[in-house]
Every structure is written in C-alpha cells, then in structure tokens.
Image (cartoon, rainbow, N blue to C red):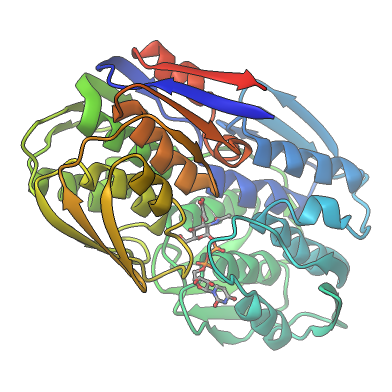
Length: 417
Ligand code: EPU
C-alpha cells in the first residue's frame, strides 16, 4: 500500500506549473473515437485516470501512443466491444464511451460508470438525452444496452446543468441527423474545450460556454491536433496552498478567468495575489477574514475546490460557513480535519468552521480525490508528521504532486508500506 508522508510547516517558494485538465482530457480522449483517423492531444496529464482510459482504448483495438504529455489516438481498427466492468467502474468519465460508441455504431453495451463516492451521481439526464435522440435503452444489473435505428437531432432540456450529460449529448449529436438544441446546458470550461476540439474535427457547434448549445450533425469527423486547457482545479488547489504557505509562490500556466470565483474570494479575505495573463503570484498572510462559500455550477464556486478551501478556512479568524449544493456526500474529509485539530461542525449540507485552529500531524485517509487534496493541504500546514493513506484517489487527479511540491520546498514523499 502506498502512503503519503508529509512534514508540515515549510514555507513554499518558486514556481508550480499547472498540468492539462483532467476533466477535459477524460472527455477529449473518448471524443477522439468519433473521428476517422488520427487525433493527437497535447498537455494531457500523466495521472492514473488517463492510464485507465488508455487501457480502455487498447481494449477497443484503438492504436494509442503516449509520450510525455501527448497522446496519439488512431481509430482505424476501432471495434465496438463491451468494456469490462473493471475498467468502466474505475471512473465516471467511462460513460463518455457510451456516447461515442452509440454515435458511431448505433449500438453500445456499457456498465454504470464509476468515480469518487461523493454522492448518488445518477446518469438519468444522459439516458434521457439518448432517448430523445432516438435510442432505446435496456438496463439489467447495471448493464445498459442501447440501440438506435437512427439518431435524430431534437431539443433537449436538462433538468440540471449536468457536466456529464451536456458532454454526452454533444458527443452523440455531432454525428446525429439534423439540429440538436441543449437547454440548461452546463457552461464549464471543459465543455468549451471539448467543443473547440470537435469543431477542429469538423463538427458544427454553437453556443458552448452558455446554457443553450446548438449542434448541427455531420456525417463524418476527421482527426485533429488539440492542446488541453490547464487544470483549473489543480490551479485552485495550489493557489489555496499558496495562500497558506506561499512566499512569493508562482502558479504558472493558468487561465485566470477559470479560477476567478476562487481568486475573488481569496482577495476578499485579504490574500495577497498578483494575477497576470497566464500565471499568478501568491503570498501567505497571517490575518485573513472568515468568509462563506456556496458551491455552484461554473462560473460559481466549484464543488471540486470546496474541500481544499475548507482547510484554508480552518486557519482564518472567525466563523466561516460552507454550503455544498452539488453533491450530498462531499464532507468525508471533515472527521479527519477535526482529528488534526480543526473545529468544524456538519449540519446537513452546510459546515460551520471556527478558526483559527492549530493543526497537528496525524494518520488520515483520502476517501476521495478532493478530500485527499484537503488533507494534503492540512498536512502541509500541520505541526509534525502526517501520513495519508488511500492516496490512489489523490493520484487520480494531480500530476507529479510530490515532485511539484518538493520543488518549491515541501517535505513530502510517497512510501510503500
Ligand atoms: N446529476 C443527476 N443526474 C444526472 C447527472 C447529474 O442528478 O444525470 C446530478 C449529480 O448527482 C450531481 C449534479 O447533478 O449532484 C452535478 O453532476 P454533473 O453531471 O455536473 O457532474 P459529473 O459530470 O458527474 C463532473 C466532474 C466532477 C465535478 C462535476 C461538477 C468529470 C469527470 N467530473 O462530474 O469532477 O465535480 O462535474 O463540476 O468531469 C472531480 O474532479 O473531483 C470531480 C468529481
């Protein structure tokens, strides 16, 4: 078993370069299967979620070549085979294969997707979109068999602006007949990134980045070259670390607009931030003021930064409140933060955080990806040594986390025990 050992309280100085976005890459890689031919993606993070997608591509007889940060995907021999449960239940994004295989073969068999256990995470909106586009769906023991004589564009209004359902609807409708309109679409930057790549492949998409997206289907798509956008959640995580421990710390390769909800909040709390076109510089401050956040869809405060941000709130003077509106089970880091010395009360979907509290090194468990990030930040500011177990969750989403933090002065190592 791998664990992460961290000796806390080291000031961090230098530069951290942000990798390509996990949640873009996990959509762009399946999307490449819509093309006849070769697609090359650059700036793809080297994380375990991408390893699983690579195995899935190989299983589907797609030729894959991975080199540092790039992935070449040749669909010449793509075959429509049922992806084994052990691959599809490793990550949520596996259901993007459901959409692309349906679009290309009008038939797909696929298990319910996996992903972090942060809520019930149903897929009803994706299935609703598939049905409205003309598919029939049978479900038995979490195995979905989806067929369509033809897929025909229509208007699809999502019950909530789901990222995954918006992506799946786009992936199917780019090759469907006629026009599809998605209403109440999600506006996350990863969706805009996907639309940009699909447009390079020959797709006709308008309105991405807004809540109304229109897609006019085409009969074929070709391969393309595409650079993945920087990971806004990784950028936000290191910015939070900088707010606590930064000594003129540079967070490089970012899109400032993508993390504006976070940087606005930090500035409101009194954090010293200098924001430039593609990087920011951050200095830690002793006196930060308590604040309240509520997680929302983009451009609101992202749920994926809620857990890392809670750790910061344990260090500010006064009472802060956090309301989680996207997932019902995203407070699993709290018992561990309290074990380390925090004073946090859970009340249904809200937290009350009393600060500042000194944190002490302890043994804690990364129950999910962003809970792991929250505990890592706690370990970095705690007195003494913290051991984090179950770090495979953390390694799903943060490329070279040990190297990046060590380079700026953190004392952190992965140990096999
Ligand atoms: N929802 C439904 N029905 C659906 C789809 C979603 O009820 O058919 C609900 C979900 O249960 C949730 C909410 O709607 O309560 C939002 O879900 P959404 O579909 O937007 O999320 P997702 O596509 O499953 C992606 C990211 C998550 C991120 C969310 C929200 C990927 C692979 N995952 O998930 O990332 O939290 O959007 O921004 O893109 C992470 O990186 O740690 C992570 C969990």
